[in-house]
Length: 188
Ligand code: HEC
Image 1 (cartoon, rainbow, N blue to C red):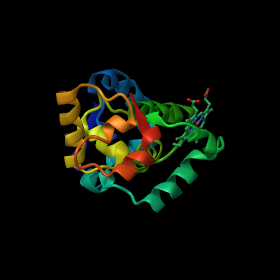
Image 2: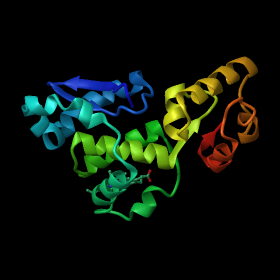
Image 3: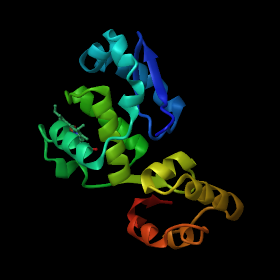
């Protein structure tokens, strides 16, 4: 979260999903079309305003859980039941795609609000392919410390892919209770 990822630039409009940077190369081409599409609705205000541009850091600061839940309820339950949204966990890139689709469907919000909802969905209803995901993504989905995420990556490098959650628990330094709680967020 401390290192915002700029995912596209088109016509001076920027769109960022900062917490997890997944696959820059598959995301970029569609992001350009996406940005062009939603730019007018979502970003025209911030685009025009230098003051707003100066607030990039604030725009990417993590929102509190309460605030995120409020945003989520406001932005995501107008057209369908929000329960349906979180019926299953999704990977970060799936959440990214979902939000892009919803903007196409007409969901509205500022960049900051979409980023907050994205981060909330990733950390609350995220799923991570633990054998291939980079440390930043593991961190965002599981809420582990940077050191713990690095330990997971180092361990799998040395020992090969994890077979299941029990195997993940062998990584030194993890909070095992947390891994149990998050077992459903792990994909292999
Ligand atoms: C303007 C209306 C609208 C708003 C607001 C909206 N959605 Fe949707 N959403 C739709 C429509 C329409 C569909 C059905 C599209 C389809 O699946 O064909 C849908 C479907 C979905 C699905 C199911 C997709 C799937 O894979 O089955 C998810 C998840 C979802 N929305 C998430 C969200 C989230 C998160 C938000 C808040 C950012 C949101 N929606 C806000 C219109 C909206």
